[in-house]
Length: 79
Image (cartoon, rainbow, N blue to C red; front, side, top):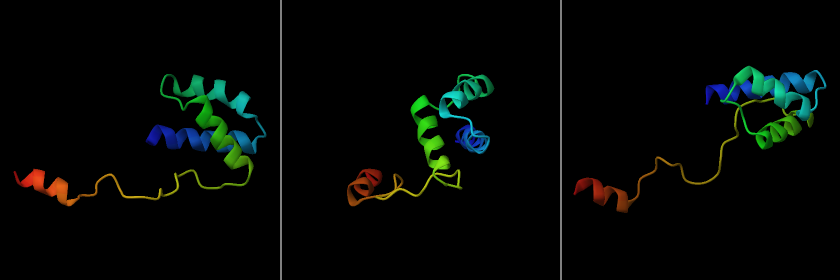
């Protein structure tokens, strides 16, 4: 998670320097090694920052959280 956040900040910085996503990708690969975001994610974040997004954090997702419990889960825990 932390590495992803660092990379988003780097992408935002590159956008401010008017670097294209295609120029940003090799820089991220060199800086972060094997732990870099996919090209698709880099293009997505590049576009979002270019369109004015300021925040580097993910937005909250709709739906039930993965840590939720249901009656079915609780029955199995009691067994």
